[in-house]
Length: 607
Image 1 (spheres, rainbow, N blue to C red):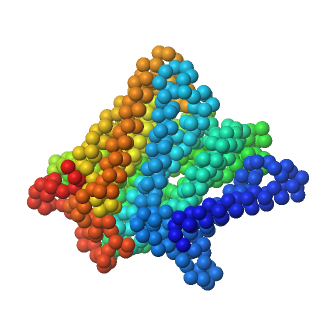
Image 2 (image 1 turned 30 degrees about the vertical axis):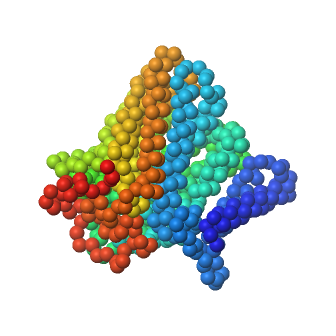
Image 3 (image 1 turned 90 degrees about the vertical axis):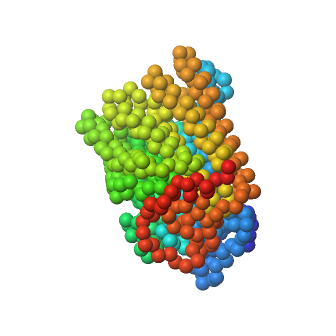
């Protein structure tokens, strides 16, 4: 059966499962004397039955579950573009599925941000009323968080981790495919939320607001839980792959820094994501069946929601940014023609960040009224995490120091990662200290800081990775000239968009509010204009990527003259990655050839 037919069958089976689950809930409620037509219990019941039915229909049944009954599996045998819409177990295809899906979601979230900025261009009401503004803001936030949590680790991680460690595939290929096919239901749930009144609680969905607003909130919570399932399954798969499938000679000291980052990020995903899945499920129970975990009128504790939510969501910041750091660190040595400086200390710094990430969550709650002793603890813990973070930065600086830098497009984006994150890190100090955080909480200072960390760090790293690995993925070269135009346009307008937001926050502009005092109008208008220009920069990227993929010049197997294993095979790689199992005899950054900068400058992107 073709992939397109599987998708059609998945939609049909999912709809039938959803209807059956909703009908069962209605019958049970009728039997107990409850209203059988209450909408939100029916939504929850339909989801519980509809999600596994979708997965079975879209490919789990033919490619996997048939074997449980002693029947032969029927995996897809698609070629060309059709394999990208099929339940395939090829880790490279799954990586592209993730990359394309979440790049499109990123662009959609960016369009929503431009709608928000259009409303904020002038004081008063121009584009959105306050309720609509909050709903658009909530959708923008959730989509961006989904992109940040998933795109680098699931996209580039799936494609390149097996290649970089010399494996044929992921440890659990069918589980890998299942984790991707959990993503389309998220899109459907979010679309359904718009028809159910939307939601206005932001991506955090704090109780008690999320317990009493419109029905769209239920769809949002279910989509978040589904994303959590995908993240946990993916994390377990990466852990098993890196721990068990490394090629002979691929010792821990020879592991590429990108693989180290995916390993540590997967550890956090597998451990911490359970917390947010649990808290969202409990809040759903409060809303749907009337339990009292977080509802104050039933004896619940709204602050308990915040503690459980941020116990995941601050480590989630490092789930987002560590892949960005290590992707940039992966690129720097190849374009500086040097070993990665202080490799062991960089790995130690990443481990330190992971170890401390679980004890800093409550700095998001300094204004919640927690005791002074707890404020002091979380202040110190948050400041301490800057030490291992500093080791990562020193590794980057040491790598480019006295290096023979070749400033191609991937290198420019990689350098920008650390420039932008430096601003995000410095401004984070003010939010880690209680006296300043009390003044800056829920202002645009926080908005600017967060975007410098995530967009300035991870999203710039995403584009660094796209340009770096574009020849490997597509077998084509991109236009280097257009790549540099995209970089400088994006870099300048990004900073001109978000730097003024620090000033807005210091001067009292609250985030998540659709209006402000007239004295802030000039800076807001400037910020909106720069945001529009920032959005326009991605048109250059799309044109370059699509046109180069379709008709760009053929790329050689190793256009950057790099040393890691993914460049030791053809571009794009064959189905099983390597003609013979590789044996690793040296580290990934062993540079020292004569005049390597001249060798590199003659290759890579198309001028």
